[in-house]
Image (cartoon, rainbow, N blue to C red):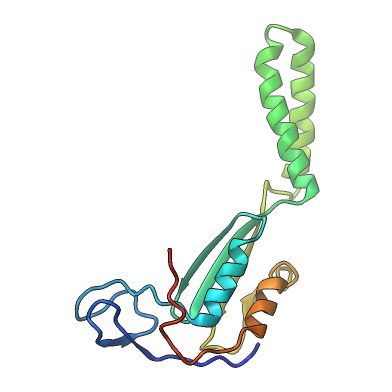
Length: 166
């Protein structure tokens, strides 16, 4: 990971006093600190454009992202279970649908029950103050784009540039 400038103190956006870049609020005025390191702001923008559902929390020098990833078996298992749940009530009025509903529930249950949950949780934590990444060994490929964006992002000297607009 590239070296990034660490900002120990930044000016509070409300009162102008120096506060920790990683503080949640100003100790003097109570103003919310929404500052995000410029390099992490680039990663947040990259993750916002992904297809997968991804929840990103960033403040100061730390970014934490969680994504729910579905593979083909998981998606098919979920669809089979949903089809089975729809077919069961219809089956009370039209008996062949009852058998189809039970079959679909069995198929979907088998796909999701044998270690294939409805989704796989992928997590990434980046702390620019710590040179190591906190990412599971299986998740490295999943987050490779975000890690590449962070590595390519030049560290910027102005701490005001990285304010994340929400």
